[in-house]
Image (cartoon, rainbow, N blue to C red; front, side):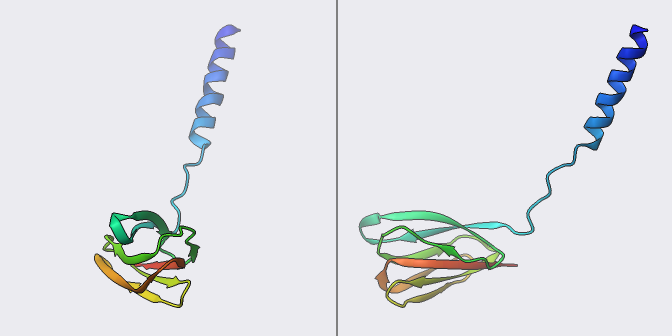
Length: 108
Protein backbone atom coordinates (compact mmCIF):
# COMPACT_ATOMS: atom_id res chain seq x y z
CA UNK A 1 0.00 0.00 0.00
CA UNK A 2 2.82 2.40 0.83
CA UNK A 3 4.44 1.68 -2.51
CA UNK A 4 1.26 2.65 -4.29
CA UNK A 5 1.02 5.94 -2.32
CA UNK A 6 4.63 6.89 -2.99
CA UNK A 7 4.35 6.02 -6.67
CA UNK A 8 1.13 8.00 -6.96
CA UNK A 9 2.65 11.00 -5.20
CA UNK A 10 5.69 10.92 -7.51
CA UNK A 11 3.46 10.70 -10.58
CA UNK A 12 1.41 13.69 -9.43
CA UNK A 13 4.50 15.78 -8.69
CA UNK A 14 6.03 14.89 -12.05
CA UNK A 15 2.88 15.86 -13.91
CA UNK A 16 2.68 19.19 -12.02
CA UNK A 17 6.30 20.02 -12.86
CA UNK A 18 5.69 19.26 -16.52
CA UNK A 19 2.54 21.42 -16.54
CA UNK A 20 4.21 24.51 -15.04
CA UNK A 21 4.37 27.12 -17.81
CA UNK A 22 7.61 28.93 -18.49
CA UNK A 23 7.41 32.71 -18.36
CA UNK A 24 6.93 34.26 -21.78
CA UNK A 25 9.42 36.78 -23.07
CA UNK A 26 8.00 40.29 -23.29
CA UNK A 27 7.19 41.39 -26.84
CA UNK A 28 9.68 44.22 -26.48
CA UNK A 29 13.17 44.88 -25.26
CA UNK A 30 14.75 47.70 -23.29
CA UNK A 31 17.61 50.05 -24.12
CA UNK A 32 19.80 51.88 -21.63
CA UNK A 33 20.09 55.60 -22.29
CA UNK A 34 22.64 57.87 -20.57
CA UNK A 35 21.84 61.54 -20.03
CA UNK A 36 24.83 63.86 -19.57
CA UNK A 37 24.88 67.30 -17.95
CA UNK A 38 27.48 69.81 -16.80
CA UNK A 39 30.41 68.92 -14.51
CA UNK A 40 30.27 65.19 -15.38
CA UNK A 41 26.78 64.83 -13.92
CA UNK A 42 24.77 62.04 -15.51
CA UNK A 43 21.98 59.54 -15.02
CA UNK A 44 20.79 56.38 -16.73
CA UNK A 45 17.24 55.38 -17.59
CA UNK A 46 15.85 52.36 -19.43
CA UNK A 47 13.27 52.71 -22.21
CA UNK A 48 11.12 50.06 -23.83
CA UNK A 49 11.73 49.59 -27.54
CA UNK A 50 8.04 49.32 -28.43
CA UNK A 51 7.45 53.07 -28.71
CA UNK A 52 5.81 53.39 -25.31
CA UNK A 53 6.60 56.82 -23.83
CA UNK A 54 8.27 57.10 -20.44
CA UNK A 55 8.44 60.13 -18.18
CA UNK A 56 11.85 61.48 -17.20
CA UNK A 57 11.74 62.84 -13.66
CA UNK A 58 15.39 63.72 -13.07
CA UNK A 59 15.94 67.50 -12.74
CA UNK A 60 19.42 67.47 -14.33
CA UNK A 61 19.83 70.00 -17.15
CA UNK A 62 20.81 67.61 -19.95
CA UNK A 63 23.25 68.67 -22.67
CA UNK A 64 23.93 65.29 -24.36
CA UNK A 65 22.13 61.95 -24.69
CA UNK A 66 23.97 58.71 -25.42
CA UNK A 67 22.32 55.66 -26.98
CA UNK A 68 24.87 52.82 -26.99
CA UNK A 69 22.30 50.36 -28.35
CA UNK A 70 22.47 49.25 -31.96
CA UNK A 71 18.82 48.25 -31.96
CA UNK A 72 16.69 51.34 -31.30
CA UNK A 73 16.20 54.98 -32.27
CA UNK A 74 15.03 57.18 -29.42
CA UNK A 75 13.22 60.52 -29.22
CA UNK A 76 13.32 62.92 -26.26
CA UNK A 77 11.44 66.10 -25.40
CA UNK A 78 12.56 68.87 -23.05
CA UNK A 79 10.62 71.13 -20.73
CA UNK A 80 11.68 74.16 -22.80
CA UNK A 81 10.65 72.64 -26.12
CA UNK A 82 13.75 70.76 -27.28
CA UNK A 83 13.25 67.71 -29.49
CA UNK A 84 16.23 65.37 -29.74
CA UNK A 85 16.54 62.22 -31.86
CA UNK A 86 19.28 59.79 -30.89
CA UNK A 87 20.17 57.19 -33.52
CA UNK A 88 21.56 53.78 -32.55
CA UNK A 89 25.14 53.87 -31.26
CA UNK A 90 25.40 57.67 -31.18
CA UNK A 91 25.46 60.67 -28.85
CA UNK A 92 23.27 63.68 -29.63
CA UNK A 93 23.37 67.25 -28.34
CA UNK A 94 20.35 68.72 -26.57
CA UNK A 95 20.02 72.36 -27.49
CA UNK A 96 19.76 74.36 -25.46
CA UNK A 97 20.57 72.18 -22.42
CA UNK A 98 17.45 71.58 -20.33
CA UNK A 99 15.55 69.18 -18.13
CA UNK A 100 13.81 66.49 -20.14
CA UNK A 101 10.18 65.55 -19.67
CA UNK A 102 9.72 62.28 -21.59
CA UNK A 103 11.10 60.02 -24.29
CA UNK A 104 10.39 56.88 -26.26
CA UNK A 105 12.31 54.38 -28.39
CA UNK A 106 11.51 52.18 -31.37
CA UNK A 107 13.47 48.97 -31.78
CA UNK A 108 14.47 47.08 -34.89
